[in-house]
Length: 333
Image (cartoon, rainbow, N blue to C red; front, side):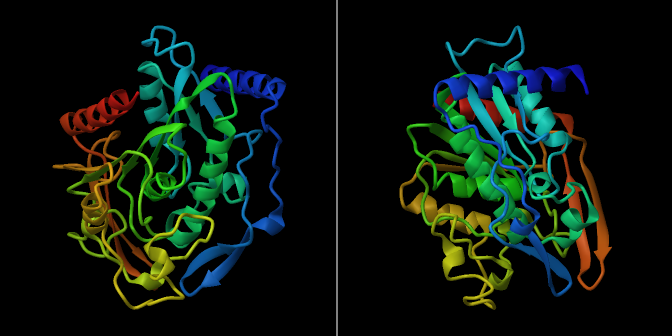
């Protein structure tokens, strides 16, 4: 175990103890295999069952505090809850947490797939599991993480942010419609597909959407850009646990052949309602553009054809995207 992970685990244990003394809900929620059943859905797979709750005692849970010489942001640290992408916790989430810790923010990372007994970064998760299945697992864990965080007295429960990439961004967007503005100051969503559990009808807290103009991740064509992608409704799962949104009438069970809104068209609908939403389209950015050099490739999936993959960005674009996110958080403190 690394020194950083040991330190994070020690802090997490201390935080749980302090929360317990204050009467907070810190119960462990070990996974019951019957709660998450993998089922076939044509060439892909999905999950059924109640799914795993957020388990603060799970090995993937990592709460890190600001670094020693980071800017002090009050007696208690603002917290950023990081909702991982469709492959599980990766270097992106860890690098983002490190960046935030250096800026004076506490961070909370966890792996929803591992909590459900499914190996992250596996072929099943990366290429076979549906967006809807992945997002349902991530959403339930993220909601639980939020509820856990607001009852801890080591972080500032009135200055919480939620951030997500890819499927985690789609979850973060739904969290923007679910959370209490008393606790959450804003949500950041990078590269979120509208396919999965859909997007909500309205939001309760400020929302920053970020898409790279070169992001074709998961597309079926080279120019299948994420922010313009409008997939058939039949790809969506209507998830009653999530806030009301377009998946209620646009899913496998409702109007499956119709096209769902693209992320950009959904943004325009929310903006027209006068809600606090902002869209940044960044030239040269691929998927997960804040970390990693730009790369572009494709993969053929059995029974599904080509699958395009663009990731990262050049150094200047990475720095620009990071600064946009940091400025947004700073502006909402």
